[in-house]
Length: 576
Image 1: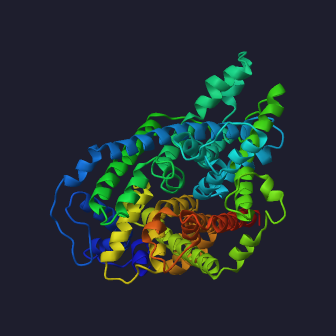
Image 2: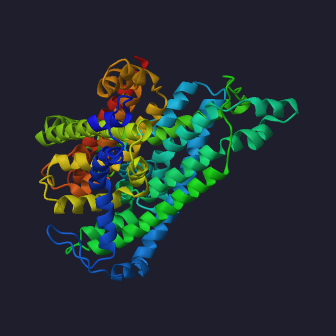
């Protein structure tokens, strides 16, 4: 901080000869930390893809080859690629249709209970997608799914199979629709009414006005949501593992995971596939940037006038029923399915009537979860890892944002660029790099919960940086400079003035990182050694072993309740 002070303080007395060197001091320290967190793991994946060996402690070779890429032309990899592409595109379109529809209803129409509709649009985010996949596997398993059993009881035969590409598209669409909802709802809520008023004055019908003006104005948000959703689904590992693997549907992330877990591990070929995954993500990100750059839409005016709500007329009630159906599919049925599985006395359920028979349903699994030392340890580990990650992540993001936006430090563009790198690297790829990094570095972190903290800091660096940077840009720096001019040190001015002014931004970013850490599964699954288990890993292990399905379901319900409590905290704090 002293070095930062020398860069920005009006009382800086550094000599002109020393100034360039000092301008690099803070940047070099921060860049070194970011390099270990982000650049080194990504570099090891790239090196492994073009090498004959994977990084091992004391053994990093430079025997370069392209042999690992020969696997890419095999039917297995091509099939996984096309599956990933089909699922990613289809689920993104469906997720955006759901999210955009709910956003339109909540923001622009006279639908009953718009506040409830807004909450329904957000609620799938409270269920981590992996838990949602587990829940729908209990509902839509082709043999033992509760909905299929209920159909047999009723004498109907519309079999559901969640272990298929359509089933995966359905689950992905439900649990990624909130991303589209959030982006599109914001655009539609702030839309200037001027163009719509002009169209109305010139005789345009309601439908024509929406089709030619309102939705085109929201197009950048819709396209941004579509591309963001595609990237998140394309690189997703947990849902594909939970639903695709039982049905023999490979995707690129599950294929990478399987190659890493074969004996002997095929790390070089995994890295080669990972490079392809990164290339697709970079291509999509580039396309997104080009589309956004070419378009300029003004949706916010300075008049503070909100657009008029659209009257749904006779469609008002059917639209609200559609919202209720989505609420049923995304939240009610999955949670009921988990509770039912946790409570069923026999693992071989052939009729739902068995549940109401004497002794057919009990909630002892929940008591087991709440009293299990393993669950208690996993809960404590999850909270320790999440809180530590959030605290350090906010501090690191604050330092990076301060250097970039409040100082003249050299290399600050590199700091911003490196911080955003994880956005273009799928979590499964970064997880492999982090595994190799903390195996070869002479720091005894691997096998402890601290390696999870370091890994989460790397994966969530963009989210933390963007949250703090937005708050810092909105905070006037004149008060801080005034304090320095009046004699306060730069450190005192930052801690007594700037940080308190950014309190809400710091708090929001802290809670965002806390929630992301609690949800994370992909990275811990590669770094897990069994010595430091967290809740997401405990659920994954309980479900994957098969013999502990009741415990997995009960633990999932506990996990969902914990996530909802954590998601409720920011709303309370914001209101306070």
